[in-house]
Image (cartoon, rainbow, N blue to C red; front, side):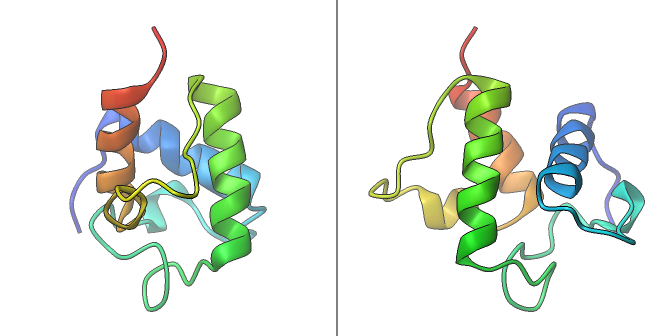
Length: 89
């Protein structure tokens, strides 16, 4: 498992907090593992809740019709990179 960058660590904390992932620690999250399905096992409702939390924290919206969403939500690392690229000043 890869080491988390500071931005990935912050996002992992947000993910755990916003989705109420009891029993999951930041250190349990592999930044390259899938967020959906076999990885953390998130579902579409989790994606909506996480998108809302990201909007509040980072100041930009992940729009449902954006073609980049599938790639951005592929893993914690991909989502963190997407946020760093698009977040408000």
